[in-house]
Length: 217
Image (cartoon, rainbow, N blue to C red; front, side, top):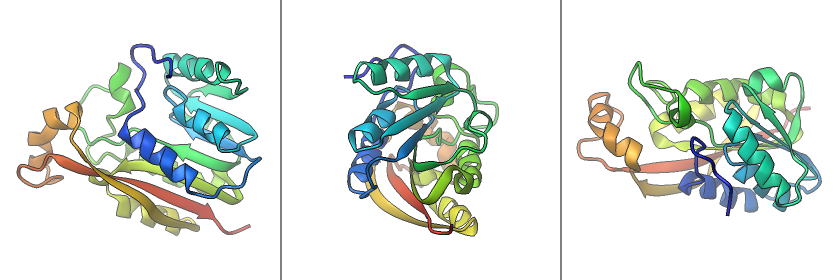
């Protein structure tokens, strides 16, 4: 059980798909893990449980930072929890493991991104944060570092793979699950159809976990 105040994204199927991928990733124990867009800190906790010696978590939401800090401390995890945009607050720091469940839901122009909505709304293509993360990852990873990112197939996994590979990372989809639309996508289905992001009547989406390895020194 995780403490989740109002306004903090609850761990859902995407979270648990990423946790499963982490358990199967064979990441060496003892490293420094980063949880980007931490929310409740569920992935920070998972990183510690799978052997990370140090854990850093980042979120733009003050309430999420408090939630993540509490959830880690209640489990005896001395995590560093930072508030702010990850690209700004981390600077030149780098990590052995990066985990990310960023906002990735496509949203019409002008859609509200305040409060809880900023945990999922990510611009017309769903890539507002994903593109930033792909650009930052080579600098965030130590040599032989590993990143695991979860997002919807509606947000174009091929673009994620291409961007990571163009920046010198080895990248591949390592986990996938087909799930029913949640409440946000159901409410947005008509717009998604009109934007050509889903087919007529489609009410299922694929979630993917993409692994990126820094293989260059």
